[in-house]
Amino acid sequence: MAVADGAGLPLAVGIESGQRNEQKLVVATLEARFVDELPARLIGDKAYDSDPLDAELKSLGIEMISPHHPRRRRKTQDARPLRRYRRRWKIERLFAWLFRCRRLVTRYEQKAENYLGLLQLACARILWRQ
Image 1 (tube, rainbow, N blue to C red):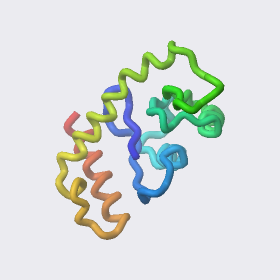
Image 2: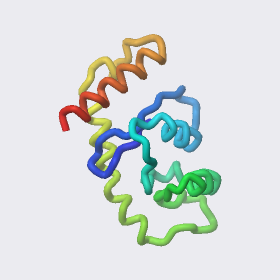
Image 3: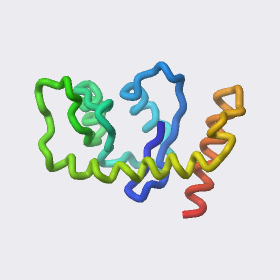
Image 4: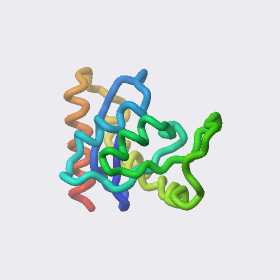
């Protein structure tokens, strides 16, 4: 999981097993950020549409912007904040930059700590180049 700023540069990265729901990883990833300040807004896909996640992020002072899940009955957002959802391509660009590193794509590392270190090194390389 990764968090990027408005320019698509990494702010925080984290790894977890594939069975965990991404909603539960958001706060842990934000706690492992590279910078001191928290972002004002987070943009996510439909999987991040959750009332408990919204409440937890609101307590941290972060606005969650995500389209409504198709099964949601009570709508909580209007269309104005969802205009920012069009900028979600910047996080996809960050993943494209990260996947230029062959060791991250094929995951040669057996230990999670080593893989996280290589992921953070790749983020430092991206920040250095920009």
